[in-house]
Length: 88
Image (cartoon, rainbow, N blue to C red):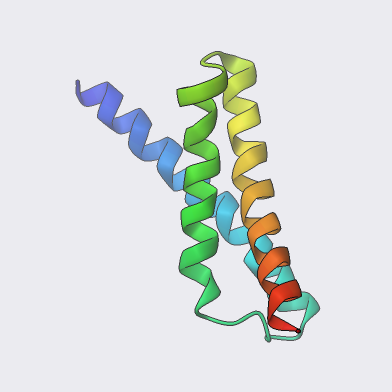
């Protein structure tokens, strides 16, 4: 039980760190204009994207890699959609 909790915590911290990267890239590109209110959205979508893979798709080594890829892609898509709808 303790090892499961430890690994779940480490995966969640990894997904949070990867989910922060798209916001950081957007902030650097826009010279600090990414918006602080988008950080929680980016982090949450990173965890949701990462958690969706082991729950819905795969639970092996490839699933672990895919979960970290989706933890990066989901926040990037969410931030891109928010930027596109905000400009209108």
